[in-house]
Length: 478
Image 1 (cartoon, rainbow, N blue to C red):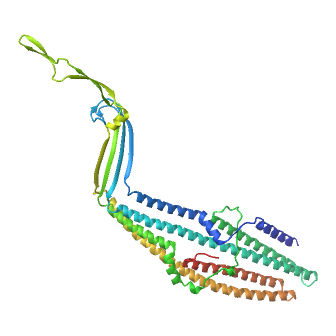
Image 2: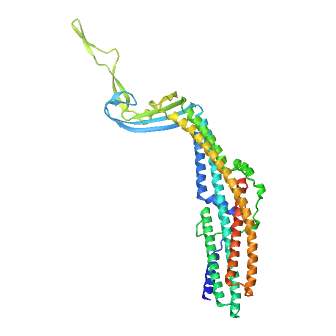
């Protein structure tokens, strides 16, 4: 009696814990949509896509002329050349330089054009990689969703088993009280009830773990309330195997699956990279120009000039001495510093020219880069071939597994029918005292196992068929 009360108490506590926090019910579509927006793996794939977009934008902007402004402020002393007057001086001075420079490529063997095209293909590959991440996540969400449904079904099955055992216990108690059965039967059924309660706890724990796994995929807090819609597994739409033949599914998948599209785009991007590496080995022609000016804090200019009429010597003619004056007057100068902006205006300079860059020898870097790009194309081709082969193997395996799942499901249905009949007969014989309690419990356990295996087989069958539909490009629907 104490064992029975203890079992009922545990069952009550578990039930209250399981249903104490009602939560909004999520269907599969809501789970997938939320995961696409919040799952870390998908967000990382989105960042990769954004980075590819930036690479493409940068390669397009590289076609525009470059423009840069440089300025410097420095002090020089000792014997050096004045950067404004270009005369030698030994006086220390402070110089402020300005330079505006620009250049543009005129011809580079289509390096920029091929770089842009390579990045365009790389962006498309990144977009497909993002879609693949979403597809993989959706598939994992579907698996977790079905696992929750299976765990809930296992809980319902365990509860039904407990109710059945409790009914047997009440019936047995009456028969024991009437003297038809020994007291040992009560103890055995109470032990069976405890075992059934343990199975319920195991099923509820499995369900909680499945919910935690789903929350992790959704990037939900583990403590937040969460529940899912429970569509009857019998009503989940499934295509017939005749419409999911592996050859036809593979032909659809090879042209629609994101991984295969990404492989194709990566190959085209790699081929364009070969053109870029080859073009870098040839001369490039560019146009350049610059504007500049400078300020020197020691620079001076003439402020005023005073003419001087002084003799530069004497000459004696006969007995008379005469002063000699220059043919043009001499001047006495006063100086002043040149203003900052006046100097910038006076020292303004311009230049323009055409440059040709001819790579001759650079340690074999350019040739090695070209060879490396060619090898990368072969590597991408092999990866593309390997992914296609893996896809085909996965589809054929999924089809084989689906066929086996159908057969196993049908066999388990027959097993449940047989076990149910055996249990019904056993119960009738037990009620009239023709069967021992051990045989009854054995029949009941056999029926429970058959029902449990049927549930596993049914959900396994649904998942295998949904996997084939996924490869066919129909998405995931429950």
